[in-house]
Length: 114
Image 1 (cartoon, rainbow, N blue to C red):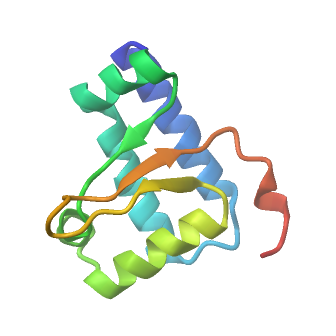
Image 2: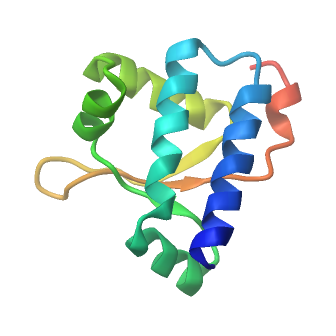
């Protein structure tokens, strides 16, 4: 996937967040920032190799980048997973590093109430 394709993906993913009226403003803000990480070179290489879009920023990075608390970021990630916007592929910790997430799209489940 080229950088242009990843930018298109990013715009569509943000649009799906916007259309999900069940998201709290802080979760929308988190998701809006989270998708920025898909245009990093390593994400592009992983997409080219696997055909899926992955991101792996730390929760600390997300909290600092969004000016949200660590607890709000943790809750927001869980909400994005529950609402079907992303899936946690691997769970990080201090020894293994950051959690890895796969961004899901297109998302048709946003019409469901959860």
